[in-house]
Image 1 (cartoon, rainbow, N blue to C red):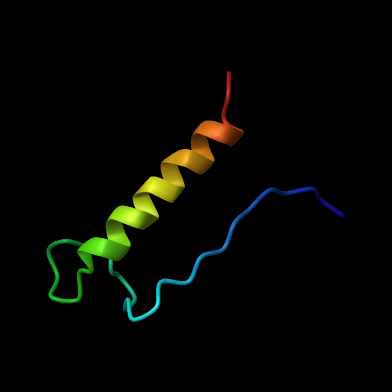
Image 2: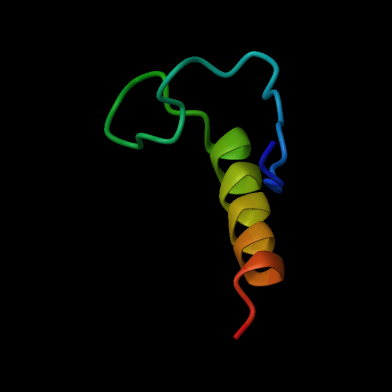
Length: 48
């Protein structure tokens, strides 16, 4: 019905909340990759 662009990525071994660098389950490698992918996606889709 709706045309929505999205991407799904699974970060093997990363726990829920892995981006929160104040918690013991923070996963630096997964967090860096997730942010890189997020920014790249936004740049592609939010061009002005």
